[in-house]
Length: 302
Image 1 (spheres, helix red, strand yellow):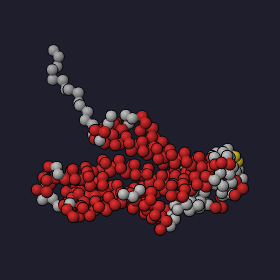
Image 2: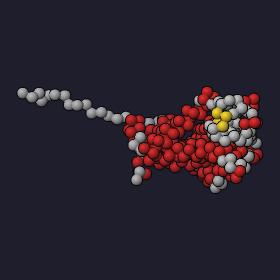
Image 3: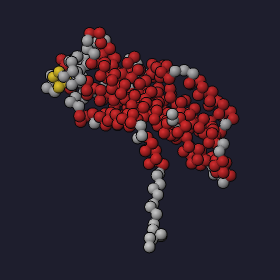
Image 4: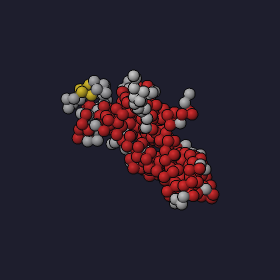
């Protein structure tokens, strides 16, 4: 006789992370963008070990190597596969070191602006009343000006330097996070589980950080991804205009600006290769952020 009491096959239960990972990697474009961005980060981190030259060290830069076309041999004996700029810096080395600056500025300014905007948005949503009105009027005033204009004015006042640019980008971006968190927190504040937590005697801090904040993280991740790409492009714009980083620091914006005057003379590589590196970085981050929005909010899927 057939054993009717045979054990049924176990049903595999997916964790939220496994489900998120499966949904994210369904998109080939997002997967490719993530691979490209991860490769850029790895190359930037390994720049001191995989580049033939340190573009920060003036002792390794030779003016005789200036404006060499791609594939030329440098005075020191190594091959400049992407050519050199007007100062004799190897473009391959300068681009990887420039990516380190761009990624550092984008991530640092994004984290600081997210922390400030998150706290302000939570305070506005939870406290309400006059406090919310004052905060949101400040947010509206901030967002009425383009972020590039705000950052440009602050950098012109503060001066050049990485720390100055990060501060300017934080001031220019915090309002985006504050508005996002405030809108999401207002929806969560009116739900039953928040009222139940308040009835149980939890403090305001516990209600905000244990119950409201975790449900605001999904839109924050998407906004943070987009704003990081925006910060990278904004830093390059400021450096291109000559108010960002000094000429001694080879950021992508500085490299593009250095080669702009040589475009009409046929030395395209000085601006084109740094521009392609900037475009690839920003585009890959935006593609990842765009797909994250669809995964974290299924209602936005087509």
